[in-house]
Amino acid sequence: MLELIKEISSLSGISGRECAVREYIINQIKDYAEYSVDPLGNLIVFKKGKNPAKNKVMLDAHMDEVGLIITAITSEGFLKFLNVGGIDNRVMLGRTVKVGEKAVNGVIGVKPVHLVEKGEEANIPKLDDLYIDIGAKSKEKAAEYVRLGDAAWFAGDFVEFGNGFVKSKALDDRVGCAILIEMIKSELQYDAWFSFSVQEEIGTRGAQTAAFAIAPDYAIVVETTTAADIAGVKDEKRVCICGEGGAVSFMDRSTLYSRELFDKAFETAERDNIKCQPKTMVAGGNDAGAIHKSRGGVKVLTVSVPCRYLHSPGCVIKLSDADESLRLVKALAEKFAAW
Image (cartoon, rainbow, N blue to C red; front, side):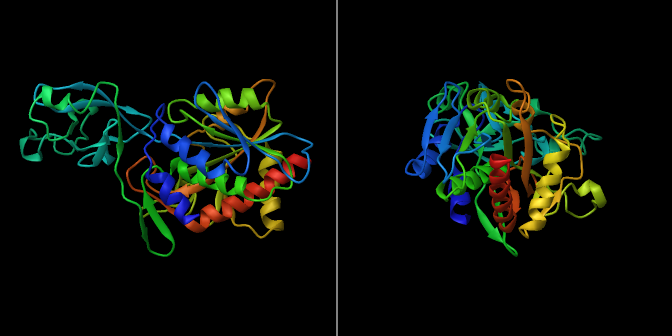
């Protein structure tokens, strides 16, 4: 799992530009299952189990990461951009990025602090104030390497540290992708469908079409979610805690989950001695929001790996949470298939 997460999180794949991630996953699973790619770019996979499933179960993880898209080149050769997905401006200042098909190195810059007017020092810079510096001396020189509409993505290194923690860009949701890859490579009790979805970060668009095509009875979304188990945050505001297993949602901003499935997750975890925890805040949203409204309706559940510093170049997870989430998702998929 460690090597898989390391490799897949290093790939570039902002929303709408998931090709490299998709090809990597295909190379991982092509000898274990049947697959196809739909017009939007979702990778749809069918894995035959030991037995036919009474209910069709869909397992979903999204391939895209948050990033930037180039909107203009200034006369001085700097790149202006907009966010693709939700990114806090504070995590971008001074960060290294890669830009375009040539993966040009760049740094996100902002006006130096000694030039900021008095009284504005504590203000968070607006997106319009930021730019990417690729070292070009003019607009014409920059245009030799970058075109409008090119993607830019964080260049966060993969680092192991502490007691089983890792740091990388794009752990949201390459961790979920890694979990599903491991499932596909394993022996399953029942037939299962998998969706590696596109464009989750800009409105759960890929999952909408994937769910329509698969037409599942049940779906399990495998995600990451905010772990605020950090200094100065107490009680339910911590959302979930690294090291306590996957976080199971009862509600978020896009889905009110079935109480029956929520309870079944914890019953299954207790029966199989799997670590899991409730997600204690109603916040965020994921592909479940699109899947549960597909066709005549789908019963959904989300299992998320706790992740500190989400949507930043330095996402942090504990590897044991990915392992525990894999165990829980696999057990629940078997339960739902035979229910």
